[in-house]
Image 1 (cartoon, helix red, strand yellow):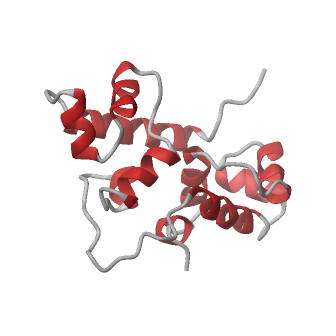
Image 2 (tube, rainbow, N blue to C red):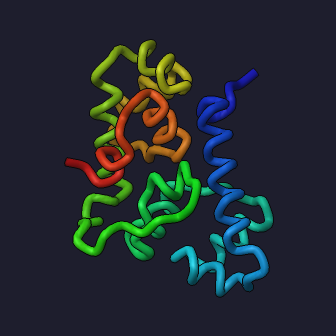
Length: 156
């Protein structure tokens, strides 16, 4: 039997965030919802059809284009915009990958796995595979382990 991706806590949080976004755009066309959330129309279609849940690429579109605060998107209770002077240059997949890999190297693989809810293999993979793309379940796992959203998403 294989382990499901992420911890149960992370899966619940991402499911809740996805439901919050869908509730916010209820009654809108796909194009209107995409414009409201700063996502692509295909992203909205996939969310509504249940083909996907909120992901890092979607979150990055919302942060970089719509200037939504990542914490408000992921944990709610409502969407909030960031201030106009907040830089979003650090919100890039490759930079988030590097930051999470750095955090994974702070502790042993077993301890990282226990704290984040990742599998031991996944925790070690973060440490030794710098080109691996981090999922939103991983980001949420590190947040549940006590790390800051802003530090993981924007850096600094």
